[in-house]
Image (cartoon, rainbow, N blue to C red; front, side, top):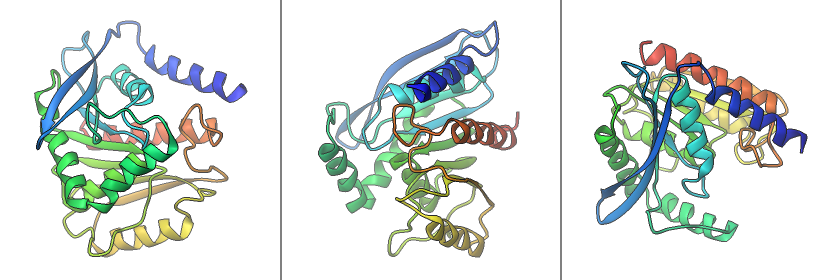
Length: 253
């Protein structure tokens, strides 16, 4: 319960940033291939100009209130934030088995995974307040998706993975990655451990990709997910601060 109170206060304080903030969030639909998707966009309508666009890729449980809240928090900081969907509007996973089935299907079909990620990136250009300058971020499964976009050479200003899966699929590499990568990870993550992080950093270095990593000692997987047993308020705040620095540097404001 203490963790829940702490994280809710943290999120609320960021959404309330600035007395003049008028955060407007709304869902929108778009199509990639033959599938309709539903995303969520948030912005501060009191700003004359947005600081840039942040695209959020959801965790393995799909696009939920968690991603909407993160989008609101980013809008409070002056960005246009767009949470996208890679499962489809008509999918509503409710169990671990369903999460595993949907995420696993995309891991098994990397071409489809990339089509949906890059198609979503194209679609957000039609969202009100969106800009040409985009940084992509993601949590857990979304963090792995961010790295998939990096390997695909997506035309963005940067990539940020929060406790994502760090493995590189066979036959893939970072030769096409043109934007900086920030890795925010827990040292006690049982899904992708420190050896996985070291391997990934070696790959980024060998491909000449600008990169940085911040490791949170003792933090486990899903350390930013507020209702998770792994939630770590210190690591959540630290990673959020690191994200803000990255956005300021790579979105030019």
